[in-house]
Structure formats: C-alpha cells, structure tokens
Image (tube, rainbow, N blue to C red; front, side, top):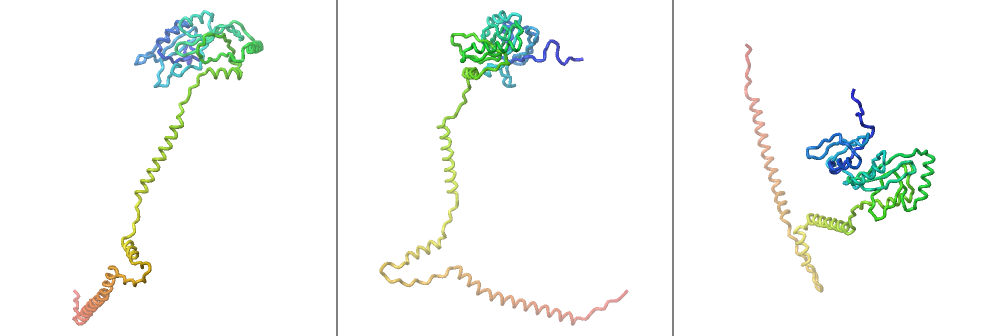
Length: 318
C-alpha cells in the first residue's frame, strides 16, 4: 500500500522560488550544510524542481518563472516569510552562513524565551532564523522576562519579534537587537518605527495639468461634432413665389407725400386656368358616355326581340 506521506518528509515542507537555482543550491550547501537529493531541469536549462535536505527536513526549490506566476523575493522586493532552523550549535551555524555570503539581519544573542537566536538573509531574498534551545521557560516566567526586556528598550526601537524585519539601509553603527516570541505583539511605537523603515511604493499619479488638458480636448471635440450636425441639417427655404410677391409689394408701396395709387388686378395663376379647362371638358365627356350607353341598350333590346321571333327546335327521344 502506498504511503500518503512519503518517507523522510513532514507535514509542512518549505518550497522556495529563487533566481539562479544552481547558485542557490551551492550556497545552501555551504551555508547550512544542505545535501542535494534530486534535481529535475526544464528544457531551457533552468531548475524545474530540486529537493535538498537540511538535517532531517526536506527543502524544495525551483527557478522563478514569471509566465507561470512563480516570482522570487528579488522580483517581489522582499519576502515576508522566515525559515526557522534549529541546530545543535547556533554560533557555529551563524558564522558558517555569514562566511558563505549571508547578510546579518539580527546578531546572535540569548533571548528571554530560552533560545540562542539570530537572523540572516541569503543572496536570493529569503530570510533564515538560526536557533539553539538552551532553556525551558514557563509561560509566567516568559511574560515577566518579556516585560523587563521591553522596559529596558528605548521607545524609538521597535519591539523584537520572530517575524522577519524589513531590510534597512546600513548606517555604520549596528545596534544589537533582541527578538521576542510571536505571542507578544509589538506596541504602537514599534509599529510606527517599522512603518517608517519599510519603503512604500509610490503610485504614479497623473498631474492635474494633464487631466485638465484631457477635459478641454474632450469639450472641443464635442463642440466640433455639434457644429457639423447643425450644418448637415436641411434649412427650409421660402418658395420663390412668396419672395417675389414680397418684393413686388415693397416696390408698390406708396411713397411718402403722394396719394395711394390703385393696385392693378392680379393675374390668375396658370393652375386656375388649367382647372377651368378641365371643368369645361367634363360635361362633354358625360354627354358622350350617355350616347354610348343608349347605343348599347338599343343593341341589347334588338337581340331580345330576335330571340323571341326565332322558331323553337323540338328534340326527339331515342
């Protein structure tokens, strides 16, 4: 029967996306003593999947591929995830990682929850925590130590935590920092300090002048469209008769200081003359129609008389 969880793996296994997988595998071998188990290259030569083992835990790795949505921390500008390593000697592991090329994010120190703890960043954007458990601390004792640690810290310094902190620019003086367990959230002063250090990505805002220019251009286009529509509309012109009559009336107006002359009679339009001709022809057509009707009636009467006078033919039965 197939085991649902392969041998040598745990319930949770980190799967890292990196840029230049070959270099990352060599770095993890030197920094953390990783052992390469398998490597599957893709057709273009990049690493499609690789399995490493650090201690008793597996680690999966693959090259970034933007076409598949697999982006490395270098492409995203950082990683919000910290990979926690428990090792027998934290000091030796810390020194080994720094010599291999890791950057120090938190110097190694004893913490109030009983661990010897440090944080480093690898050249590929991932954050690693290195720790060795040295003391079992009860919950009450851990709370008391945490209050003392927070009270001894200046107000401008953010409260330590196991969460990965944002990378700040080097100032020349490194202040040792302590880390706190995840159960103790940072205070308001710590949050403000962290917000100041985190570089915010400024959104590109379109200037107001460009917005105004666009609005003005739209208005001009709308005005031109209205003018073209107005020009295309058909303008109704007055008929030539009315304009001629008006001109004649203006010319025949009585001049100032003289008696009004009698207006000459208006000539009848050609339409009225044509109507009169049609009216004269109409009675003639009626008379002609009546004559034709009489002739037809006479013919019908003659045919009837002829049928009555004609002898009837008697039929014979066979």
